[in-house]
Amino acid sequence: MSNTAFSSLPLRAEELANIQSLDYEVMTPIQAQSLPAILEGKDLLAQAKTGSGKTAAFAIGLLHKLDPRNYQTQALVLCPTRELADQVSHEIRRLARAYPNIKVTTLCGGKPIAQQRSSLEHDPHIVVGTPGRLLQHLEQGSLKLDGLQTLVLDEADRMLDMGFYDDIMQIIQRAPRQRQTLLFSATYPDEIKFISDTIQHEPVDVRVESTHHNKKIEQIFYEIEKGDRTRVLIMLLEHFNPESTVVFCNRKQQCQELADELWQKGFHALALHGDLDQRDRDEVLIQFANKSSSILIATDVAARGIDIKELPLVVNFELSPDPEVYIHRIGRTGRAGSSGLAVSLFMASEAAKVNAIEKFQDSPARIAPITSLKPRENFRLSPPMVTLSINGGRKDKVRAGDILGALTANTNIPGKQIGKINIADNVSYVAVERQVAKQALKILSEGKIKGRKFRARKLR
Image 1 (cartoon, one colour):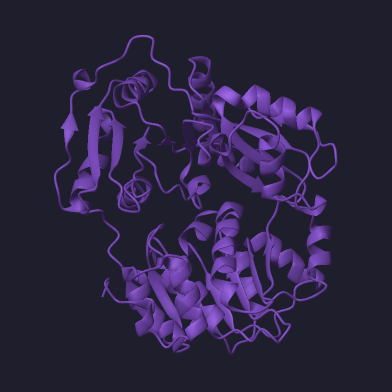
Image 2 (image 1 turned 120 degrees about the vertical axis):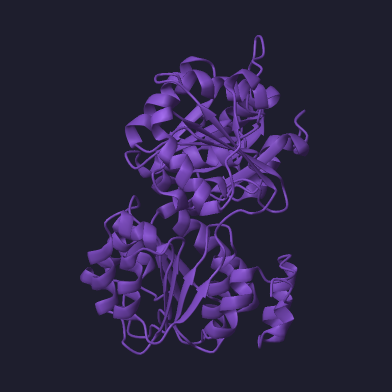
């Protein structure tokens, strides 16, 4: 099934041409198993991990049945976090290029609700958002679901973990009863089955193998003594010298404390957790994605929606008591054909967690001695890029080409030293190679973009 071509699906020629232009070659297992049912209009209950291609599966399905001439909200996608919602919206927009004038709107907390209300004055075809903010708009009457055809619950298990059950059910009560409902979940707790029984009609049940028998992810466990976690983590970084690392902690406070401790020791480490405001969360993710930070320390909930294609190392600073959570953590590495490394720290008192992982994967854990780690003298793990922030964005008509032009026209900075450029509503970010960061900041601070002066600053 995983070698099935998209051309085998009953899609229009322009849809297939756009899919091909986006370098989708053959369907992933979740796409091959779910898309025929989705295109037939059936409800779907699907278990699939992050990175399995599920976003494209439901996006292709909801776009196929969409009527661009009907200016009503025809599809609604619920996501647990703003990061995932942004990622889903981006993917839908890419797949919507085959259709004329499709409006996709993202509605999440952390953004002014008044601006969102004004964007809803002309109904979007597709809305993607988090449950709390979507419910606010429904209660205020700014979001209308009279024309809804497709409802998607993405990463439903995480939405339940985050306490969104009541919000989700209230949203569904405001949706038409005659609709297609697609429910995707990485894990399959009893609550998911209950929700499916409540809101779906004879759903097609699709399960995609969630364990990583894949040899591309090397898994190593290190037994440590109490109070030794940070010291051993630094030894790991010195030994493996990864360009990018995600470190998983079980608690928000632990994330911030570890990031602060590593920062004091000279590592560019940033924390991602629920206590950050939205601007800080955005900047943390942008810096990590564009290689301006070497280490991201995150909780499981905060990490949902992170999509870094080349991630050489994942570290379980603490093991989760749930072996499925372990599987989803390590699945962040070894993607897109790359090999990956997943390293886990555990104390003797946590041996039961390792045993549960062994049982879940049906394979023995490789436990290596700490003495096998070789520290390096005068070690520095410096990110290759620096991120500069500019106080102008989409609403100021700033485009990526304008920033690139300002940095390279009549300067000594070649384009190859400019990295990713992210444009938000009121702010833009550009990654530049570390050796030209001061020069680039001076150019942006003293020069003009599109004939206008903007303030610029270097992110941490």
